[in-house]
Image 1 (tube, rainbow, N blue to C red):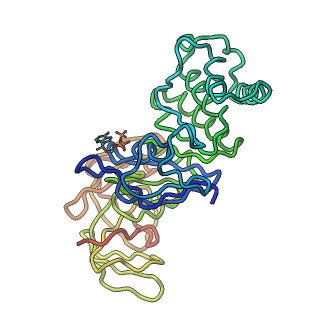
Image 2 (image 1 turned 90 degrees about the horizontal axis):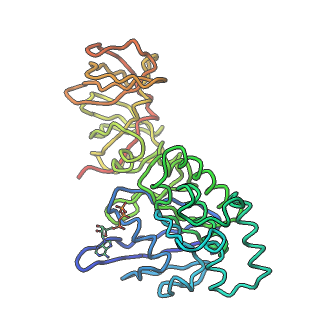
Image 3 (image 1 turned 30 degrees about the vertical axis):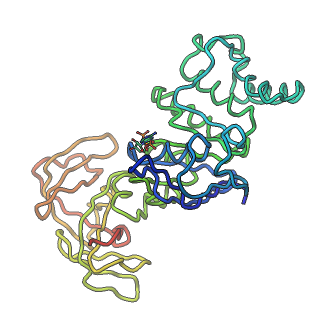
Length: 350
Ligand code: ATP
């Protein structure tokens, strides 16, 4: 295949295993984000793909070629860091050209590649400036341009937006995605910002403790998390334990939970007689008298503009509920229902 293929990639630092036998495929032209908490192994995995770290086990193929032991400069990859790492004494133009000159790319080809990147990244007004005469966003664009002129098959990003303010992040985020599409690049993007991951990616690999816990589209991760870790990490979720009482042929599953009897529907059978389940705060429906009726007392209320966030007490535990009824106050008793198909079955409980 043309993209990236990893088989049982492993990285040990002494006794510590930072990446634990990870396997995945990334299609050519796909934008994949590695998302997870600090220390879960995202950067280490990215460094193995770029060649800056040699795995202690497993194999990696780029465009069908085994590159496991190939040094970074011999791989068809380019890396874009959070610190832009521009040469401070070289102008923007010289920074952009640097890699091409090193690779001894001919003048005509060099000019054609530079012109395309300068136009695409809107850098023409800044070519004679030094990096310290540029804003953070402009420096980021030069760093991106420097990677793009190399026309890599695979572009790797390590938290490239973390030094930018919120507004600029949104802007550069859209730019990165547009350029990645225009140039048909395969992209791996590392972040611990879930909003960024959901907004940008074709697929997100959610990592936890050196493993990929779930690899799916942003929509699938949100609506059908497979584990409580993913449910909790992507958006907010109410997670609780449930005993499976019965299942029927229609995919209906009757559950005994701390909230009482609940009915869920799922095309997948429960993984065990005792499982974790979750539901999203925004799926609590206060207008309907549907199935899974629940009563709770409001402990805390936070008005958020287009909705109100409620922390409610039900059956002695606290849950989060969102409502568009701003008149609800702390101390009120509320009833809401949960649609069976919005109760998601997660992992088995040991
Ligand atoms: P962050 O979001 O904080 O950057 P990360 O998910 O990118 O985290 P990594 O940098 O991949 O995490 O590190 C994964 C684990 O491996 C961490 O516990 C880290 O301390 C450890 N680690 C990384 N590099 C080394 C090294 N060279 N020697 C020893 N341990 C290391």
